[in-house]
Amino acid sequence: MFAAHRQLGMTLAEVLVTLAIVLILIGVMSGVGVYLKKQSEIRLVESTLEVLETALGQYYSDYGAYVPPVTSKQEFETAVCGSEGTVTFLQGEHLQGEAEKAAWSSEALYYFLNRSPAAAAIVSSLMERMISSKDASGKPLVVEITCSSTESVRTNLVRFVDVWGMPIGYMLVENQLPVLISAGPDKKFDTADDIIHR
Image 1 (spheres, rainbow, N blue to C red):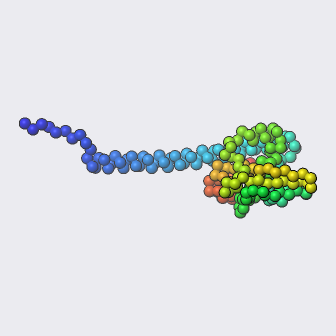
Image 2 (cartoon, rainbow, N blue to C red):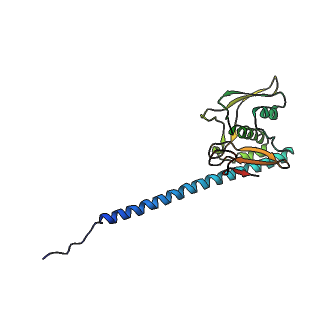
Image 3 (tube, one colour):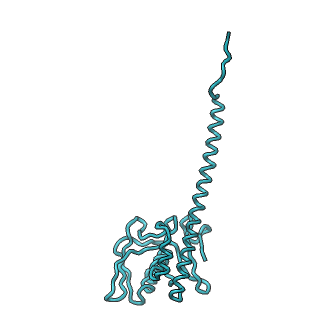
């Protein structure tokens, strides 16, 4: 008489439980994805610092000294040209604030490492995104470097950067050993997440 009726669908409670489980899994996986992305970015910066250290070692082998440490426009002019040099900005604006010193040191590092053919070959292995010749607004940084009254070169001012777009700082400490510094994910120098390579 009456046929047995089988339930083919899911109840509202079953749908809600399934939806809750799916949302929890998505939340966990997105958290894991963010963590993995941050870790891969940190590893990329660490490997970039290692490449730069290798290039510095090659530069030292070629010239018997490390790249001079630079933290200002005046020190850059002196390192590149001696006492009678000037750098004039033709296009773009240089970084200001806490990143300015790191930018000048990074630009000097790029300038000098590319003067040594062996160090330049090592630097050329870096990913393009780890090198920048643009200011904060994306305009090219074009400068004129004048080393005497007769010499003048128009060029892009190029720096090494980390994956967060901040310049990689360079300095010499303790017995003149090089130290390379990334501001880390927070983009601020002298904080706990800085990536330092000695």
